[in-house]
Length: 173
Length: 340
Image 1 (cartoon, rainbow over the protein chains, first blue to last red):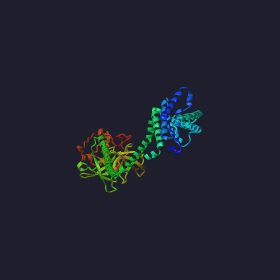
Image 2: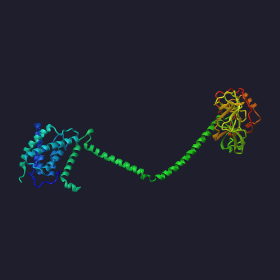
Image 3: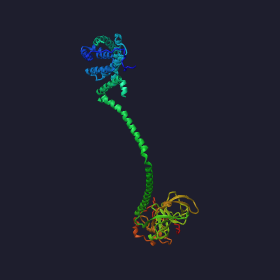
Image 4: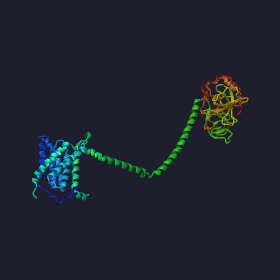
């Protein structure tokens, strides 16, 4: 699987208005921390992960995808109170890279494919987090639980809606 | 390398970015004992390399020391062998000197123990060319005022007597020579006899009647009747005995090691080596005189020998008489001592 190669010529690369990517990412982080104050239900949705996946599959550039994921992840670590810097950074770097690579090969416009893509990336993201915690922190982080499964379904459902909203920020081709 | 990086640029960047963040984590995370993870990793990473380096250097050093460094080993080995040979010779020489010093020390102790007796130390310088003749030569002679019939002893016991005197040497007839005879008695029973050479390494004691009860190991000392040896010098011990006609055949084990003599003492007088000399015993000696001139009359002790004669101070040096009979006890038999 040549996931780091060049983009296919028949796949459309979406462009956004200036500042859209940066502003959306910052808003996602702000909302994530803001909603955190109003209850644990906000933990069901990982907004930074969703924007990472969205801009990755939309822009279809692995380099920008991994840097975007790294930036979002490091900021998310920095905004958390006990995470060492890099935990989310590593996970979202890899997710951003893979999302860009996958977006260049498959159709990511259909809501169902978006749902499936978010669901898979959610668990992949959790797996990387758990692996990192096990290896680096010696924590026995679970790879899969029912709670995570529910989280992934909620996040995927919310992501389909969010992606549709974000599609409006694209430049018209 | 650069070409590979360019071809897989996104993947390489991913690896770099992830690696940077892993390092970032490693700087923050602390393990047991408050050790940062990056330090833990660094140690874990470096330890095998250090071990490998140590192993390599030790083996390279071993190869160097075991092969390359052995270039001069052959020459050094020869030099060390030569040195070892010299040291062996030196050791042998020192051992010889040590043995000589020990022998001389024994003689000196003997002399110091009997300052009253005139005596002279001598070295054995040769032996008889005739295997049947038990004689030897010593390095003292007429110049040292030695005379015939002077007794020769060692701290262990009686050796023999001087039979020939030359200007600088003298010939000693050992007690196991067939022409030799020494007036003797048993230390315990005080029974007299004569220790005579038989031509064998062991002399025999003669003129002891069959009724005399003897045990192997009984001590035999000089009787003084031969006018050569003072009384009570150790001759040896009884070896094997068997009845004879008319006297017992008694084998004597000489106290002195007659086959390994190196240093001897020449008695320059008949000064008795006894603590006290009773009148009776003196009479007994006097009656046993057979005309032979006492050595001390013909050979006065040289003053240079530093010898003092004081018989009252003398203790028997070698005749370890366990329960000697009183000195005034009359001997049971007084065979005639042959003239030697």
